[in-house]
Image (cartoon, rainbow, N blue to C red):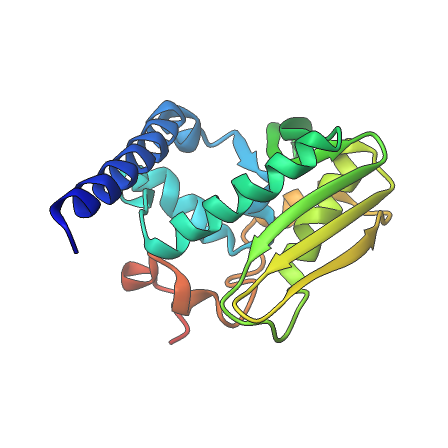
Length: 205
């Protein structure tokens, strides 16, 4: 590999790293706020949010598969923007649990009044769609008041999409279960992929 090629790729990687780090640092206070719950938090083990609040600095990750996922997102979002979708649309909802008010926050990959599109990358084209991805999209649909959604997967061996209709979801009940930490973990595979598993007392490995 030539010195020029190596330098150029490193410049691109550094630019991307600085972008992601800035985004993380800009949100550092929000990440520590016990009254803010991200919609994506609701589809994972509630202890992940708790550990993220306590150890916010180590929650920043920069891995090749994440870079790949973000590049795929940016490429597909560019096409969706040309089709009239609003990209990285933010939504929020206040939810009260036993007298305490929480703010749900989310950011949809692509939004229109008639459809929400979520983009996912996966290492394998099998066992799709994944339940936590469906749950995330259905929460977006319920909170945004949109009837239909599309879940797009890009994997090494396939490009596939799934149509998802809105459901009568009790968002408050889901938030309550999350706050009370009723499902630890939510999925049997979570501990294998969790950066906090080394010091989690509920690790199931």
